[in-house]
Length: 100
Image (cartoon, rainbow, N blue to C red; front, side, top):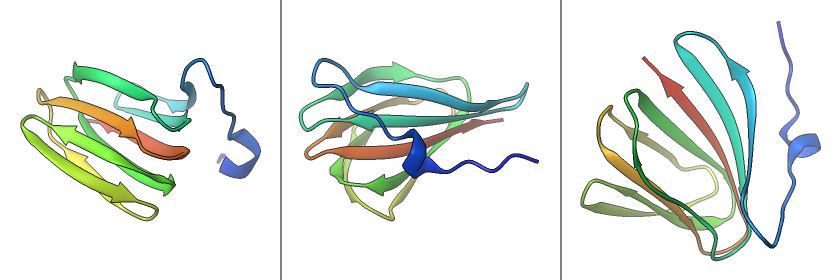
């Protein structure tokens, strides 16, 4: 068993977003991504399904040709092999789960 306190792990940088792997198995990856306003994850295609939980802040998640405005408490689920991107409009904390 593992207990993770996100408050202890949040960290921000003016130069680039900060990504931390919290748990990794053969079928699952859990990441914490911390953004300052204006930072983004560039568009990418993942082989696994991904769920983004917005812990705090405001931003946009793009999946293929659709764009979703997100704020704290939102969950966005994206299937495998689809382009995805996250853009921070304010300081943003995202818990990303990649799974099969």
